[in-house]
Image (cartoon, rainbow over all chains, first blue to last red; front, side, top):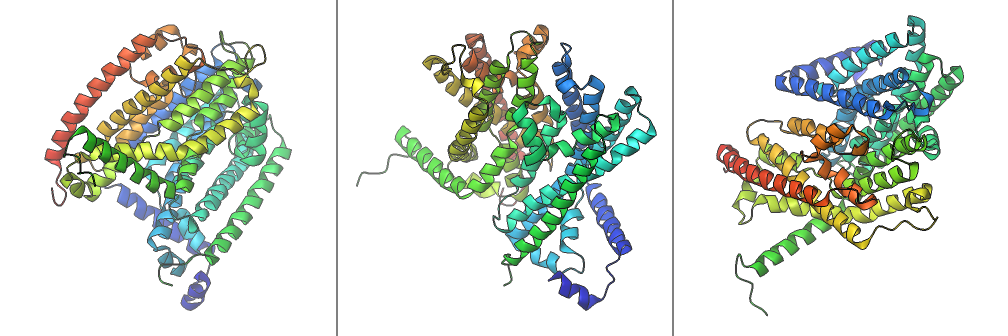
Length: 274
Length: 279
């Protein structure tokens, strides 16, 4: 359906057009959220306390000289920092959009999205933005900086970490989108987004901190390892380019997979109007 | 045909309770896929089990072994599954959308509707989480093996106490969240406050670590708050019984009374402030 709309309106499918659309989406979303200013404050307090709790839990684990999987306190802190970044991104962009897909399917309003002259997956992935993740993004970035300073990492190491971090974001997005696509068949599945959020919680700790069976599951079944452990490990030099290559493979596979799955699901979408 | 029991009589109440519960079990059973997902969302105790098995195996934590801490987190998992509460979101939705108004016309406090929805959901969830529990036990059988290599079995009394404490924990958490949710009579987004009140539940209840690993002063101070009784206390009673049972029971009872009074006061004030259509 979106393809027909595209040919009718003859708008070029250029990158700049999508960038402009994205800017419009997000400025509109921020304007809406600005009406509830108290939410900004609440979101900030919640994020601050959550981060404090996460570091406190880490301190409980490290209190008797125990080092999780041989990772030092600073390295573990870097993992928490990367987790906070991803969780912020998830709360700000990924979750609100995932939740909306479920609602659109249930109410039959997905039809209108499919008719719009933009790629439907693009619209469904970025249309919404919530303030609830923004403080996490800021604090996560700050903590990455602090942990990097404590570990005496240079700009080159941090930049090297950006590649697997980007791949981790792609993996997180693609997994979440594929799960949200399931709502085409099972309409009431808003919990999908909560399920994703809590699976990511395993990424608060480096994967080597887990018992053997978990390490396998967190690498090969739910690739949480590639989301937080690998980016942090690449920054500290613990993991080499083999891991980055593996992350790239997983990311590419999941991205193509989720795109295909979405198109496949649309074929069985029985809209509200037909 | 037997005459309908008199309105408000114990038999009538029992009948109302029974029908409410069966309606909600049927309703929730229709959404079993959603409930399964929700179970995935509440697997945090099993994630923490993986971290603590390694920590316990290091031998650096006094009185904690890999097997004992695994057992603890399996108990926490069961408690978590039986104490999932979402009433603040439900109430917020009803207040903001005005859907609370028709409920107020019923000769039954809406609280009972919410309570039975939760109890119904628990019954539907039960088979799913028992299956996950069995998988977890199969993956890590040391958690349910005693020192002699036989099955670890808690005494009948402790198991019974565990079940009773789970329902006490559910009542505590329900009252806490229901009271916080009532803020939606005054502010549009009370779920923000609920997210805030979720934090002490997450970090101080024993869901992420057994509280005995904390410095004893901190752990003792926490025992005056309601939070350890939501997770740590029932779990600890089941796995090794090393808790001051009566002190705990009295603290739970005290908090239940305080929260119940607070809840009713806020409910009355909130209703007076409620201004949706039909109110």
